Length: 638
Image (cartoon, rainbow, N blue to C red; front, top):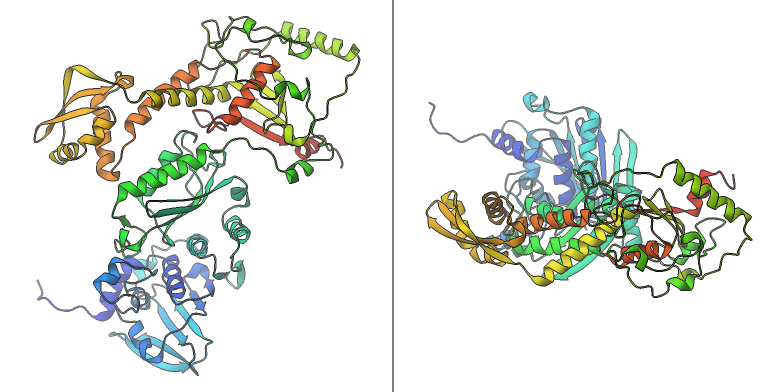
């Protein structure tokens, strides 16, 4: 073995570049962050061949002085921190002083800068084995221009790991999107092979910010997003979260920023996943653009050279704050009264009317008792005299159609006799004297409108000011029942019962230590545990609702959550899963004929119920078809 010796500056920088520079997108990130720290208001990025042949980043910041240029390409040279106190409260995007040195070691880098107020610009290059910096006069406006050519020209092994031009530019574009979303006050331009891809002006107003988000992500995102802005305990969060119906098959629309820095954090992902748990369909991913603000002293950004990861001083507080903020925002999403603009723009024949009966009949309507026998639910008239349900007198009874696994219901559709009966009723209606529809002010029409009819005992058709509303009555009633069950259980608190035979659980010593640390948290959730030996626990008491659960696995999973996130919702998840099953079996089934008052009562309950847009399994409960969409189906006005 050779003797210990110092590495050459170039080799040391190339080793460091392995952590900082993986592909052209990493270079863009480092250079644009430096430009933002320099106070730039306009940043232009030019790329050729996906950034492999050329990357040029130009800004109009305060620039670098001539005397500082040679030092700027040295390792651990920075103007952003000086002492340890600065490191513990970093307020800039960069601070490690490694980026320029690393980039210059794996590419042909040229840095040209003109300091604000200076008469001329200067240029610096690092050449030779020892990377000696050479400074020369140059032409450049106030600000800095950095060019990196022929990435990995001197490290062929690293160059082989680069992907195709299209793939590399896709990563580069996504990186610039994150940076553009982090600073709305800055203008960005991106060109690829001399073609303009993005040209973003400064966005100071809310509407301009929304336009930038729609441009960089997807216009449909802003049409299906909820704005959130809340503050508590020294934390503030704002941004947009997509509706559950706008879920994605992959997490390609998930942007989270901590003090303006784009991060990927397990704690944040876990909190957001919990917030969407009750409303997201299996395997789907939420879409969001969120900004978390807190004291820089409460978050450590010096975890990894790429600065994608952070560590919170009080992770549990941050986790609970994010979860509760998003959970409440999603819970408050309910059918809303359409705006006047929407009413006026919903089609040529969008005059809002109430049909089937006088609108005043539904003013102040009471909620329907879903367990009331059919004969007691009220009188019927005219169109309300639907085909009676032959399977019993109350919803969810033993004679109801058999419920199938997976949250769906049996597809018992009306037979030929029922269709014939409906046709006879249509003939009677056609022979009757037409009655004019009563006119109703748009303000008096509820968000989901008034029920018109039922389709095959499965869907409810309703008319609102915008057009037609179609409701899946089983899915809607399932959500209503589920939310009421949760409220009822929450009001009673966690009911626990001792185990007849306490269960012994063998764990690692680290898990046993955590169990002792979080014994109060377990007790609040209805679980009583005690440490019996260095590597064993005894479970003495569990919640009543979970008496059929695998207790050992439940406690082990809770310990894992508490050790990683400082919080656990395993018991709540198991409880909600049980309540969801109960709600599913206790909800109105397919082929159950409802009267108009019953259908309208369901619509009013949906408007008052949290998360009523999705059933317990994440499927939508209702959809809206505007008059303009209906006109297009029949080519009206064309």
